[in-house]
Length: 228
Image 1 (cartoon, rainbow, N blue to C red):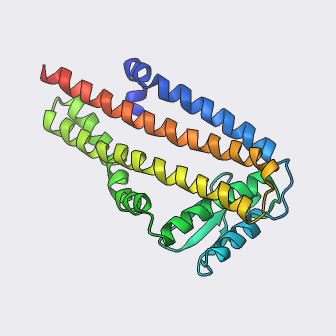
Image 2 (image 1 turned 45 degrees about the vertical axis):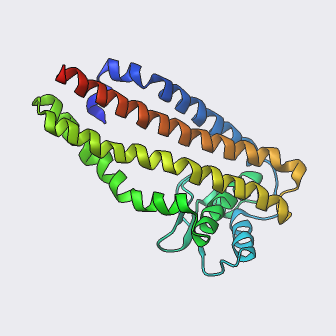
């Protein structure tokens, strides 16, 4: 949303979310670096395979992908994709992140309702984050209120997606922490490093959600001011 980043009022409006996001990113980088130094008995890929097999998900494949912290589960392909460090390293960070992504695969297999809703909302959120902002900009520039309201409606899909994504991510982390202990992948006394990484990652989602909510509120405020 480059148009709005030149607007000091907008930056001031979403400042709490930006500050929270910076704190979350700093915490995540620090927690990840520390947890990568703590040894684990399995690599991330091996831990994920063990978790998936224990849940009866032998059909879910595990692949290595490029990037750092690019790990994700693809519900359409039934594939868990792990970044190089997570895939091959035997560290607390690697098994924690791998377990979190395996948690999403388990959610998918168990038909976890928030995940189903989130997957349905993905296309609408994609349209809302692109077309919605474009309509908002055009509506503001040319003073076309109907485009402004249409943009707000579309961007609301982004907010909905972010809100429904929170329980999905929190639940995957909860599953991961319980499974790692239950399967003896990480001893209970060594779990703080894993919990630190997953908690930091969760805060990044909270910050993103807060930013989308504040952004929507800012758009609504602009529309209200124009109407007045």
